[in-house]
Image (tube, rainbow, N blue to C red; front, side, top):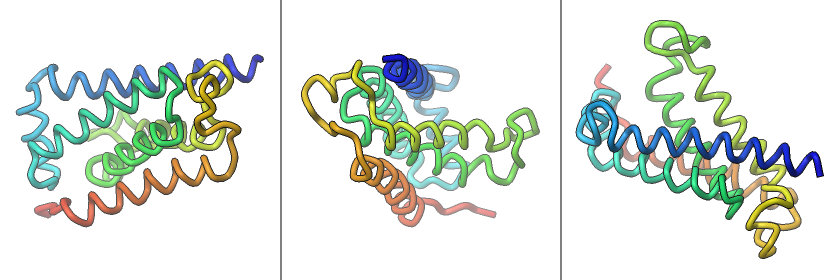
Length: 165
């Protein structure tokens, strides 16, 4: 049972972080238009489309994680969004988040948490367990999350990332 509580804490924490990110991209600071300008500056074209895709993905994945529903797919969404952020914005700034431009330690940690949840599943305190979706957890669930995240990120970058430098 302690493992299930631990997974609930991990899921809820990661889900809350993702919801906060999505909400902030839409309603915080420069709102969705500011997020779109920032995405354009990173080379994501068109910026407004990608601002909405990232924001809605973060909100949806976060909510699913909090509920423990479709956990490998939600984890894959986290992996995908964080890999794109890592490559487009954070990798050139070194490891530490407190460095100028923000290093990649934070997005790497979120991506690794997504990978972990794809492999462990949501636990027994979840909708997945209650209705038998992605339960029992196995290599198939792990593969769904990791492959969805990495293939989604690679496809998005291949089609839409056009950095100017």
